[in-house]
Image (cartoon, rainbow, N blue to C red; front, top):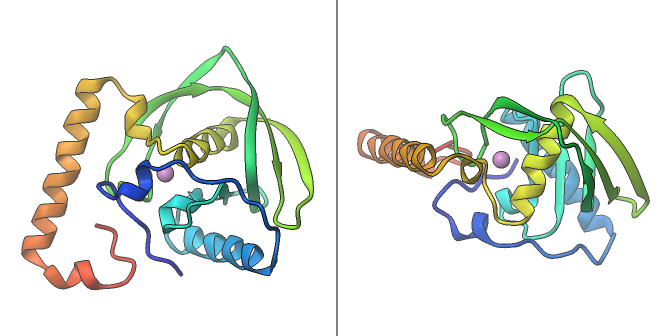
Amino acid sequence: MQQIITLGSDQLRQKAEKVEKFDEDLIKTASLMLETVKKDKGVGLAGPQIGFMKRIFVTHIEGDEERIFINPSILETSQETTKVEEGCLSVPGIYAKVIRSKSIKVQAWNEKGRPFTMETGGLLARVIQHEYDHLEGVLFLDRLPEEKRDALTAKFEKKSRNLQRSSPRNLQRKGAKV
Ligand code: NI
């Protein structure tokens, strides 16, 4: 289990670095990320969200196998888009409809250093685009019209402040989603 970094942290705004070494540590980090995403009932998690500033993300979608993407490239995106509600473990409690490509073609490496390419649509395509954004320091809120983004950011900040006031201990507890 890892504590998830939330909105306001600089790390979420930095570009992650390429993974150079496919070693035991990388495999451990990938399984830690999968453990964390399952524990927090998320569908995906990217390295920067746990302060690991490398180009890696995992997906955990019901009905799909657990997937690990390292040094991913999105090779193609469909012209056709969909607008679906999204949330983010780094912005707990905030949801918004985000426009993304309906289907994509992605190339990446797995934790063993084996390359693969896949074409996918539906929720997996959406989650991959969301997680890829994290590697670039981009959050789903950035994909919204400015007014909406500002309103939701303010809502998040207000919620965090209220939590801080009412129960300061919650902030110190590992894994507290604030
Ligand atoms: Ni996210």
